Image (cartoon, rainbow, N blue to C red; front, side, top):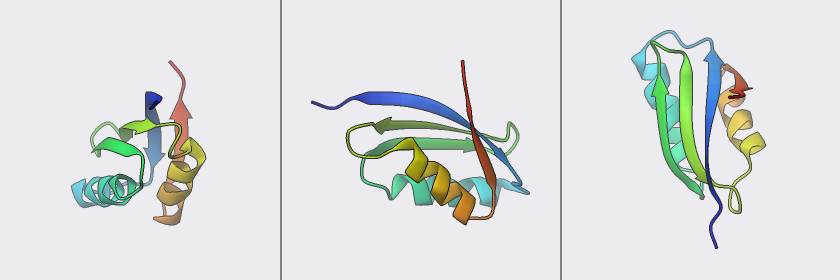
Length: 75
């Protein structure tokens, strides 16, 4: 049974909307990521994913490898 969760990730270092699109494309390529909505204006990504298929750490690693500084926002 899927364990769907949604996390907000603060992302430092984006310079334009193309940065946001690049992050979305790479995150959505991961098995278990349902959706990624990255906002250049807000400097955040809202990611919905299945915790049983992909770990949050893997998503943070991908964002970091693209050259940005991610951190999880706690609500």
